[in-house]
Image 1 (cartoon, each protein chain N blue to C red):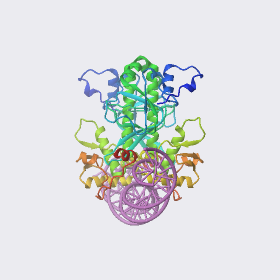
Image 2: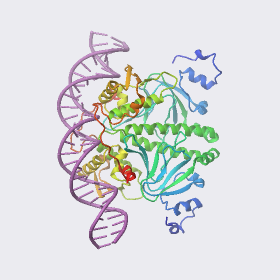
Image 3: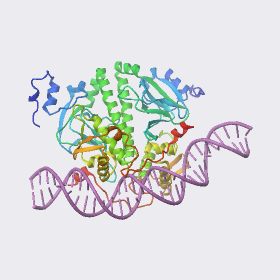
Image 4: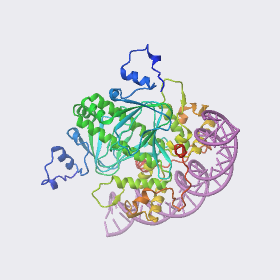
Length: 256
Length: 256
DNA sequence: CGAGTGGTTGAAATCCGTCAAGAATAGTGG
DNA sequence: CCACTATTCTTGACGGATTTCAACCACTCG
C-alpha cells in the first residue's frame, strides 16, 4: 500500500477524491466520478473475494486498477467466468436483493471503488446527472456482456480465442503500443471462453504459426493481422477450406 | 390489427394508456408503466424488423406481447440470436449512438412499446421514480444476458437445451398450467444456443426418451422432472457416466 | 397438388475434451 | 545464488460429441 501521490504534486489541481484514488495506487481511467463522494476505495490481492454470490447486494463497484473476474460455480465443480472486469468497468448491478455472481480480484493490487447502494440511489434521485452516469455505466456493462455472448456463440475454439484477443486489444488502454497484455492465465481464458485449457493453448500456437499473432512473452503478444484475426472465420488450425455456409431460418427466408 | 378492447369494458377502470395497449392487442404484463405517456405502440408480424443494427438508437423498447429476437449476423452468414425477448422485457439500450443489434419479431402480432429516447431521458431527469424504473428494467436485461452466458457456457448441447427449457419455463407467465410453450422454431433455438439444428432436435428426443420431458405438441412440452433437468449434468445422450472432474485454477487453489 | 417451411433421423468427418507427460516460469527459503 | 516446489503452459494420443451433408416425413398454404 505504498503511496504514489507525491509524483503528481505539481500537476493540475486534484480534488480530495482524486487524491484518495492515487493514494491507494489507482492509476486507471475513472468512471462514475459523480459518485466519488460516497466511494470507498478497496484493495484486493489475487484470488480475494470482492463480493460473494448470494449475499446482499449493498454495493455497486467500479474497477479502478487491476483486473477482476466475475465467477459462477457450476454443479460439476467447474468454474465459469462470466465477466472479465478491467479498469473503468462497473459491476454489482442486480435486479434482485442479492448478488448473482461472486467477483474476485484476478491480479494483485486490484483496486475497486465500492458505492453504498442505497446512498448512491438517493444521490441519483436528487441529481439527474448521476442517474445518467449510472445508466451509462450499466449500458457499458451490457455491451460487454453482449460482446461476450457473441464470442461464446462462435463455432470453433480458435474463433473464440481470436475474438477474445481482439476484445482485449479493444479494451486495452489506448495510450500504449499495439502490444496486447493478457492480464489472466490460460486457465482463466479457458473458463472465460468455456473451453478447455489445452485447446486454448493449441489455438494460440495455431494462430502464432499462421502468423496472425506474435508472442513477446507468455502473456504479451502483438496482433500482426487484425483483420484476419477478426474475420478468423471457419478455417481450422489444419488449414481446411471453409465449409459451405449453412444458413439458418431467417437467412433462408431472406434469400427467398 | 383487430380491436380486442371491448371485452374488458366492465372491468376495473383503466387509464388511457392502458386502453391503448388493449386496443393493439397487448395482453401481457406491463413494465415501464411510468413512461406510458410517451410510449408509441407498434405491432409487427413475424420476421419484421423492429430496430436495425447500426442505426441511430432513438428509441428504447419494451415487448408488450409476442416474442422478439435480438440478432447478430456473423461473417460466415450465420445468424446468432443473442437474446429472446418475451412480454415485459425491455431492449434497445446501448452505450453508443447506434443499435448494437437488430431486433425482429419472432411471432406474428408482436406488440412493442417504443419510447423516444431523448424524451424518456428528460422525463427520467425530472422524475427519480422513472429513473429507478429504468434502472430496474436494465438490471433485468442484464440478468437475462447473464443467464444466457451461463447457458452458453455449458459443455454439452443437451445441457444447453435443458437449461434453455428451464429458462423458458421460468420466464413463462406464471398463470397457466405447468406446460412450457416454446415460442420459437428449432432453428431459432439452435441459433440461440449457438449449436446446429440437428443436435437440438437430437437432444430434445434424448431428453424425451430419458423421461425428463414429455411433448404435448411439437412446440409444447411438459417438464416431468425439473430437478433432473436443471442438474442435467454431464450425462450424455448415450448414458455415459460422468467424467472425473477437472477443476480449474481457482478451484485448485482453494483446495490447497 | 406442389412448393415451402419445420422437424427428425442417419452416416461420415472432425473438432474438442480428457488423460498423460513434460517444459517453462515464478516464488520461496536456505 | 541455488535448490526446491508449485504453478503455469505446452504437446501428444485417444475417444466421443457435434457438425456437416443427406434424406425423409409432416404440415400449411397458394
